[in-house]
Length: 544
Ligand SMILES: Cc1cc2nc3c(=O)[nH]c(=O)nc-3n(C[C@H](O)[C@H](O)[C@H](O)COP(=O)(O)OP(=O)(O)OC[C@H]3O[C@@H](n4cnc5c(N)ncnc54)[C@H](O)[C@@H]3O)c2cc1C
Image (tube, rainbow, N blue to C red):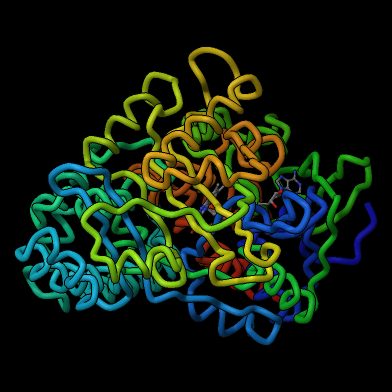
């Protein structure tokens, strides 16, 4: 095997690029191998219809950890971050409680919108936002650290545990108990302890089921809310976009990694990780090309890494059995629309002034749009998936990025990016290729109840099923986070208990993708944490 690189990274997803950057900055020579024609993984922008560009998959960043944005100097590498004042616009149909909720960056402005539904909730919202922010601050430090070793805790692990303990105590008794109690709770219970407005409850609870095989009544859904809040503590979630779509984030990351000394090869699918006597030896590409390297880092999900890329003879049966049990069954689909004009959302109860803002689109529709007005709606949408069907009334998380970024569509036209949950990877009847258009029709029909002119404005529709997520984008089981972010697959258990520190049973082989801690979306933290551990081993081995 020929070698010019001391490190090979499999996959140019955002985490692989972050790892490549930190390793190159430390003087290593990483070679990133990406099977697709472009770098970016699940964070890419495509022209899906002539003149119309859209974030093909993820449409809002987690957000990327600010330290990573700074270290990689992403703005110097062309990134323009867009952070609208409105985080979420949540319309709800007619009837008691009907109307539309606007949650802003600013808690007092959100409270004004909430007051239309309930004065009590309006008074409590700022307190909830602040409480979540305090708790999330502790968790965000945990996310940026390597989970402690369970078998052989070292001095560093104990020190970090002590520091976390101190952080927890610093929260004060009330918040500390909240954190301990909230973790295993159903998010439906958590939001109903704070609020009486169904639309507000459902908008916040949606974060607890995002990307997961969970309904709001599932135990552990609050843990997912907390995990997501660790990246952005706003109750409604992040509204971080990039000019040019999510691909602009990863293009800037790729440029930063290359500037630091990494090399990226696209159209270079790895078909095998070569192992010699329990030690990694390099990789073999689908073309047959062999590349030797003493260190191989997989930014690909754990199931694909261990079950498809490594010959089973190199792994212990017990380990393989545990990887087989690692849950990675996706429930998300994506629909992207090219639109002739901005749709008008019907928002009963809106004042004429608010209505004008909405129609103008510039403000109200600049963040994310949440469709899922009640807790029961979210749970029913999950019920369909539980029994192997896609939701007949799915939960939708929508952006219209062309409203704030005119580079994405011709003048006066728009693109709409629709994240669809629940669409289970395994259908009870039929297959995804035959159900693709039925899913697209269901999404458009669902949305038509909120924006009646939408169906007539569609120039083109792109439907991406969970099977496409697997086959085209390499997400095993179509799982958007490389595996469930459930209580038993988090922190010291991500991906497996005993293997949460980026190392694997094969010496010299590491994990750096979302299947490794913390793995919660587009934050870059799995990649940054992995780089830190790899550099420790590299230095320990006397390389510098
Ligand atoms: C539809 C959808 C919507 C989402 N929405 C959001 C959101 O709004 N907010 C958020 O924070 N997160 C969101 N996510 C999740 C987020 O995008 C992912 O968790 C994140 O991008 C994963 O990054 P990664 O680098 O770990 O892996 P990936 O982005 O999956 O990158 C892995 C890379 O490895 C490549 N690869 C696979 N196999 C091989 C091989 N054999 N050889 C070489 N290369 C290989 C793949 O092509 C890919 O480029 C969404 C994801 C999806 C799919």
